[in-house]
Image 1 (cartoon, rainbow, N blue to C red):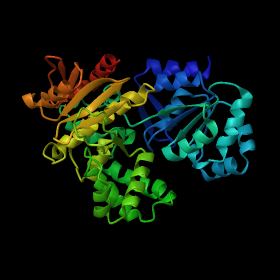
Image 2: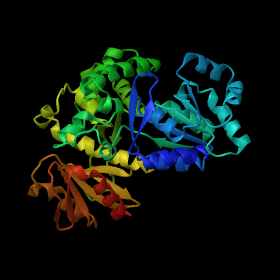
Image 3: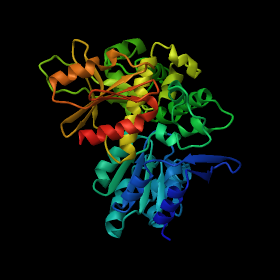
Length: 424
């Protein structure tokens, strides 16, 4: 049986996989990832597949589980990195095919040689690349591997993925998944609380990733900037305010925000620009890919604190929007969503756009459906020919209000499936 088929057989028959960690006395429980079929399919059509995403999102574990017979090379190891940079031809001759190159952005010299190797061999699924720095990866890929590589983004666990894990107790309130987040180690590490794990994660991120970037000279100020971003989660980006509160220039704030985006810590949701004869907000909104990390940066140490926190609604909205991004990435698609807000305060939290067909989604953290849930959707529908719409809220019941379906927070995936079907 081929390596690809062997990997598919394993993934399709198990709800989770046990793989040995670098430490021989520990096991890492791998929850079956929804992106698995997408990555396997790409390996049948491209010579190189790249899996990018934040550090500790499970890229290496996924690659090794899907391609168990591939050689594995960690390019963060100094000796292997030296080999790849000093003698790239000799390095690739050692691993001519069926190899996983982990953290490959650390060896930019290798990309041009990978291009030559892929062109000469003309075989699909030769190498799997992983990387946690989007800017460095994409720069090297666009320069050397364009047309030869399929790029897929692996984010921390989605709520749908965690729901398949039989060892995790079911959540009774949305504050639980928001506080826990989705990073594998934060979710499943025995003997370590999520708060401890996220603290160590931020320190590692600052020490290992940010220090490598010449644009950051003051790590202390950068950490303050990161915490201030968490305090503005779900809000319109205001670089001048961020810069003033951090004590840096406007241009530095812009550069640092780009670093956070490139390392998959935050993302911005762009506004929908179409002019409905109204003055529109034209700045993006700021979100974190992982709400557990955002909670730690806000000083939240328990899920009960979220319910009464001033940013409870913003954290719930962040969780829903980030889940949409995960849902799209796991299918191999780019997110096609915006928000819409006019100068008078009317707003649609999440506006799915599929070739001009719009599906508005309102996000409400409250547990009781109220008439105000539909106010902005009704207004938006007077400006457009949009019919179907949805509300997702913090309660437990599904309802139908005219052409608006009300989804409870547990049914995120069903909502996104519906939005995709209607928009198409």
